Structures are given as C-alpha cells and as structure tokens.
Image (tube, rainbow, N blue to C red; front, side, top):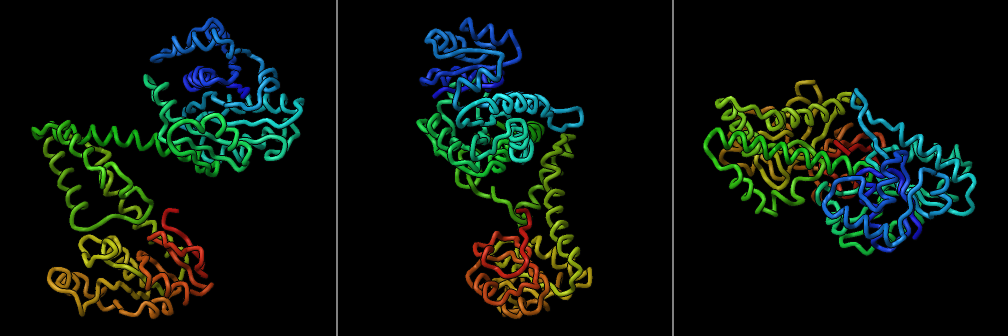
Length: 438
C-alpha cells in the first residue's frame, strides 16, 4: 500500500521504518527539516534500539520518501497515519493546535484529490476528538463527506521506548476505532499479519482505551513503589513480594476485578487497607495512592446516593444487601451503608436479598443485623415482586435469574432503575435505566 505518515517523532519514525520494512511505500511528512534530512540520509531521527540499522536499510530499498508538503503526501498515498504531537497545555488540557493545523492542510489536499482516502489518527487524543473536532474540520476544509469520500479512525499504539520495534511486531492486539468499514479494512490490510486479535470498535472506545492503558501503567508503577516503600520500612523484600504477586494470574494479573461496578466491601479489603496505611504511617512512609483507595471507594456510595436523591422520589427498592452476590456476609458492605443512608434521608425502603434472610441467618451475620442494623432487618422481604411493586426507584446489585425475570415482567416505564451489577438483560427493561458507572 502507499502510506503517508504525518509527524516523524517517536511513533511516526518507528512506523515509517517498520511499514517500509514490511513492503509498503511510505512517505514521511514533518515540518522539521532536520528530521526529513536525517531520514533521507538513512538515519533515524530518534534514538531507539535497532532503528538506525532498520532506517538505513529501508531508505536504501527505495521504499521511503520524505517531504514537508502535506498536499504531495496525500496525492501520492491511499492511507495516512497522523502522528503529530498532542502535548499538555499549562492547565493540563490537551493541545490540539498541531493536529488541527494538519487537518486543515489535509482537507485542502483532499479537496483536490480524486478518489477515496483514509486517515488514521495515532496521536493520543481525548475521546470525542476524532468525531467532534477532526472529522468536522476535514469535512469543512475539503468539502467532502466522511464515510463517503474519505474515512477516518483512531488506532492506539502500544510502543514502549527502547523496545518499540519488538512491540510493533508483537502487539497485545491491534485496535482500530472507526465507524467506516473501509478504514477498518485498510488498517487490517496493513497490520492484519501481526500476532494478536484484530479488534474493530467505536472511535471513542479506541480513544479511551489509550488513556486507560497509560493510566493503568502509571497506577501499577505507583502501586509497586508504594508497596516497596512500606516493605522496606518494615524489613520485607519488596521484589520477592511483587514477584509472588505476579505469579497469581487468576486474581492479580488477570481480568478479575477489572470491571466497572459498585464499591468493594467485605471482611478483607477494607480492614487490610486500613492496616497497611496505619503501619505506613507508623514508619513515616507516605503512600498517597493506596491511602486514597478507601476515599475513592466511598465516593461510589455517595454517587449512587446522590443519583437516587436527585430524582426526588420517596419509595426505594434494593436488590442485594451483602457485600458480594452469593454470600450472606454483611461486614462493611457498601450496600448496607447505602441502605442506611436511604433510611437516614427518610426514604421508604424495601430490600430483597435471597442470601440474607433473617429466618436462615446464623452466627455473626444474624447478630450483626440484630445488634447493629435491626432497622434494616425489618425491611427485608423474601418476595422480589413486592420490592418492585413498592418502589419508584430500584437499586439493583443482584443479577440472578429470579431478579432478572421479575424485573423484566414487572418493571414499569414510570420507574427508575440504578444498575450496580451490569444486568445482562438491561436492554429489555421497561423502566428508565442508568448504570452506576457506565
């Protein structure tokens, strides 16, 4: 394929070299004459393992050309990758000025071009940027319609400095976000040979994915460092601990828990976080990220409460009370906290949880209800239909078959449902619907 790369920084330069290596004819475009001159001489404009040798080889093959002229690059290619910088402004906002200037140039070139052209953004941009900023800009300046005479999408890159060529050849997956099938197929023709799944999704999902991944990487680094400081202070080998953490691929390095939902609770996580932050404080070790987890968790409860209170309705039904579906453990359950807040605000509450019924509870959980929250115990019912018929607002933290069936059969359009469980049948429910964080 004939491909143009706009922006010859880190991502753009690696893309030029690897695409040309794979047999494509590549045009590199940049406003920096030094970068253009270096590549024209077969030299890499960035310091990166293997890039000097690879750039020399692909330039020598005749498959790489450089130009400062955007019009020339669009005219001589079928697919363009946009890799210009999107740095931070002083207030932290994304600076799109370079990308917007480029899109004006691309639009002017597209106005003169016969035939279809594909544009793929690889620069990191906030969700909505492609659909709300870049496509309208291209349409205005070109007089063409996206999805008809040109197509646009977003492809996140997963390249680490110092291992970029290896990462290019071994991606975890290849993702293209676009609403235009022709863009997806063009990208597939370029990257479809690489290992890993080829995923087509919405443009906004792909844009958000890049921020999610980078934030998660930053989170992991910070978490490991904070654990390391605590471990060091109390004489524990932090590397040995983290090596063992990473050996657990069922719960730790896995899909487990990485699902938007409601707050955590139970007998382990809250108390262990308190203990860890306490021992860190005793040794004058600051762990601001780990220390903020509990407060962040509390905000999920406050958000759910505020969502219900804003409706101004008085009758509330809750499905679920224990900290986790399928258990009767009420210790530090965020649902108990939420129920108590509803009661404190004067709401008329009914609760259904098949695992938390007074007639069947024994031991610590029965004592907890009788001694600590007897007012909640009196609101429990064994009839799911009663809860639905009673309530103007349903707060649902269970997704078992009984609850799902009852909601489908009995919900009314005038009711509001706040979903804390990501209900599998949510699209078939007749009430007004909102997810707690989706």
